[in-house]
Length: 504
Image (cartoon, rainbow, N blue to C red; front, side, top):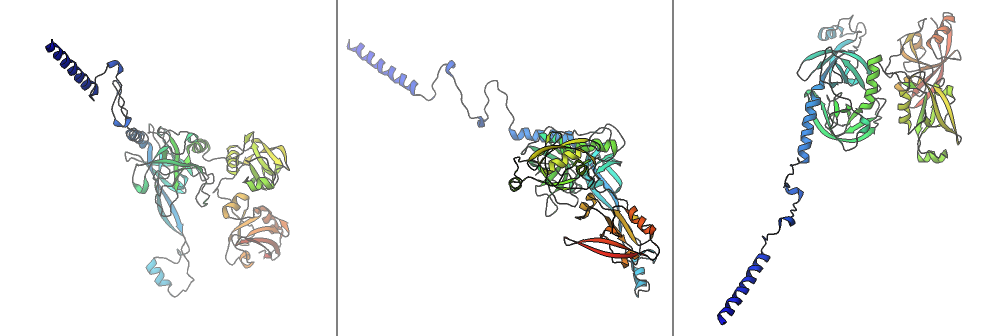
């Protein structure tokens, strides 16, 4: 009996030990129905039946490669040849070293007064926008070019024809003969977002088909630097590396669409510092349509200058609106003048489209065509009112004006002054006759006149055209003196003076 008691006790204790070992073991076994597996996503493990997802860096690399392969062949290198005339300086006859000058500098007496011609080449980029050979590029690359060559990715050279150019947006359209060229698609720049990845493709410093990547840093940039900066500025800013030679090349989103045309950089050294600017594709699309159809861009003109509404102005004018344009100047005889717009009017809408600021108004007016009648909502003396204006054509920036010489030779070359020309030359006076050249030893030079002076009145009568000035000269007898009211702008001052000029 005792024997069975000890066997049973020993078996019970052994069972307890085995059960404890199983329960406390780290590799416990549980039912399959209760099986759970939790692993951190960064571990890279896969669940049963799950496919491996590529890392974000891998996806981005694939996108960049795909875009470069898709858009790269459409990019071309632009070579534009220009001829510049450099003036040579004349020497008085009988100068003691005249023979020495002629011998060592190759100047014959009959050539010293003639300008010398020099050829220079500008390099840039462009890209096909259609298979039939249309190439979009920058105006500053092809402006005044006597020969334009486009070099494709396979190093084939094509002579290009200038279809049209637009200095106001720094865009130009050229065309080469042929078909089935690889072309890029213009996307919608209005849909881009700050921080979005973009690629730039071009030929910086002659390094053909260079691809750089970055993000959209800002939208709607206005540089206001003057010089070659476009008049209509709505730049996309990017930190994708852009250098000299990238101008005219495409800025591309991750869908492989061109959302900008690279135009300029901001740099103290002339090289990339991560601040580049591109012309939005939405603006380029409008320009291309007109260049194809008309060879130039026709823009509407209202004839005012204005300023944005600030908090201080809002308080002074007792305005209840935050957005709009306060009219600071109305050009005489302009559509705005004829419509009855006045200084200090506040423009808040045009054709029922709200006006954000001065830039917004300029872009909206430019989109109208000459002859369009527009409805302008203004606030005047705390009252809202509607005026109607018939838009006319804005004179193209950089359009050479016709210079005329007077019928009777008084040694003057004149051109009528207007607000566009005044702005171009930095003048505050917008009416009268601008003197563009004064011949040495002529009657005008003896009267003390010089280029840049503005003739406001002749014989006490206002003049606005060269013809009016010529009519006065025709009626004058030889030797008679006519009275001129002349304005000279110096150091920010407008100095009016009265002088006489003798009719030959």
